Length: 265
Image (cartoon, rainbow, N blue to C red; front, side, top):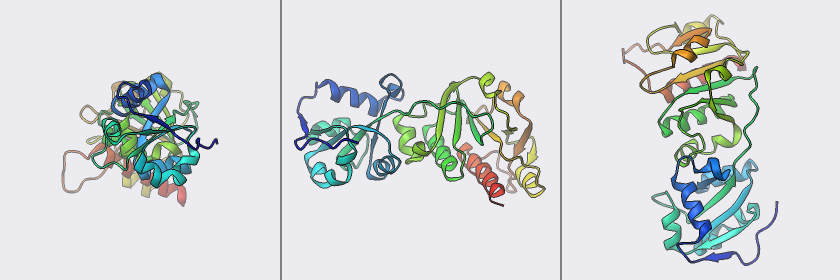
């Protein structure tokens, strides 16, 4: 990795082309696709990027933040730019910002692995839900995540922020069709609130397959007919208090944890 110049470039114009590009990355959910770059802010998220070797194209700092963080984050940046506090505030999406962010190179989409433990996201819409699910996938060892077309953009600023660094340890493939998911050669488990076998029963009787692909559906509509048709098994989570359904991020975390405990035996 290259070290930043001793004198970072100073930008003072709100009409600067690079500043406009960073604003799009920070505020628009799909701008990363055309730019092949994504934007991150916050010490925790930037530290996660640093630890996992994400390529940082540009580090964007206020002078105060550069004085504080130059030694920590400067060496991982191909280039460093300084903004006035007012310009950085126009860029930042955080209520309480540390005064710096990183423009990072978007990883190349990996090749789908037919035999891998997999998580299938079918048209999920809530960025917070998807970010939380990605954190659980990373925590419980499910590296391959397949997003059906219509799912919220996985590298959008809100999902990346909610993922808290999980993105950097996962293999994410977006915009897939049910036909492409059909190329998986592991059992596909369709989750449901009302039908199917209970998760704890399958786990306790060693009937839960590993590896497998967990399919999580739209927050309101559930799984599409096309994805359900691919399922080998329908699974539901026991809810003794009788709630209608679980939040999809909670349900995904329970399912992924259960699979991980079986692999650990």
